Amino acid sequence: MSQQRLVFCSTIADSIVAELENKPSTSIFILTDSQSKTFCLPLLQQSETLKNAHVIEVPAGDGSKDVNTLVSIWQYLSENGATRKSLMINLGGGMITDLGGFAASTFKRGMNYVNVPTTLLAMVDAAVGGKTGINFNGLKNEVGVINPAKSVLIDTNFLRTLDMQNLLSGYAEMIKHALISSESELKNIFELDFAQLDYEKLNQLVQSSIYIKEAIVTEDPQEEGVRKALNLGHTIGHAFESYSYQMNKPALHGYAVAWGLMCELFLSYKKLGFPKETLIKVARFVKENYGHFYISCDDYDALYELMLHDKKNTIANCINFSLLSNVGVLSLNQHIDKETIFESLDFFQEMMGM
Ligand code: GLY
Image (cartoon, rainbow, N blue to C red; front, side):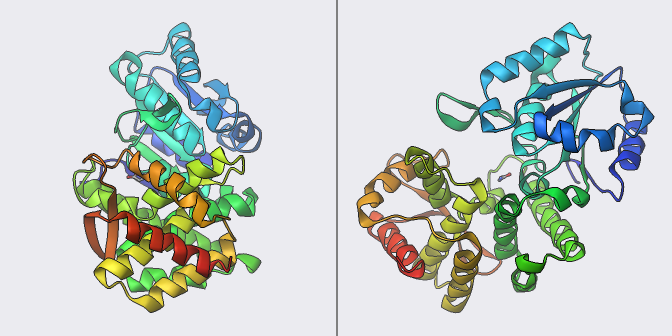
């Protein structure tokens, strides 16, 4: 039984009208960021039903995913007559679906919400599966709840105006989904040519990728077992991401995940016999499309320290990985020693030709 309805739209305005007919609500609140307000909101507002909806706008960027912005959303809802029968529509990227999902899940102990993701990362990952929350105390997604949207409306036409870096960022999560799924999914992933983007093909790949995630979160909504597979690439990836911020060279989430996938597939190869040719193929694809992240051996200790603080670890001083013994064959809760992790960083540096 699926937790949320997935709707693949040809026209977002028509799809949203159909969705709202099934969800009677006393009032509608659209949460969006300044960019999505300019480029995407007018498409939603083509529908008469949404012309009079309240619009809550927050600044674009991850800085808005904080407790102050959350309070300002609660304040707006409170001052504008929202009830637990109101509906929140989250229109934007992952920051908006995480923040709006959390605001809706907590206001009056929970009102319904619908996600309308506008970036690739949000379509294939953030908007699906009910993880909501804010950053707190310098830590990402530190406070939140798992509470799925009533529906997720996916209109890949939004991707036609998304810049290449953000497309690639989302695509890293699609590589991960293919790796934990099957050889045929992975083959399709390698076939997309970013130099001459075929949006029809991308649309098909996006749908397929979302179904992979949906199947996993339906089986394990609370991340007690198989959902941990979605962490592939993220233990080392999050360390790269945090380190890039510390170094004042911020990397997009998906780029850090792509680099993390290279290292964690190396760990999979080393510890579980993951096929070397697939490792090399993924590594080459990542290098060609995501470029370098410059590190040297002097950075290893700092990266290791960041991995030790990963919130997925449940045993002190023990880093928890989700690895693969083959494409589609999961090996969860793998604890890898420091020396092997450093070897994976050596591999990363060698492949990047540093
Ligand atoms: N982003 C990973 C998950 O939803 O579990």
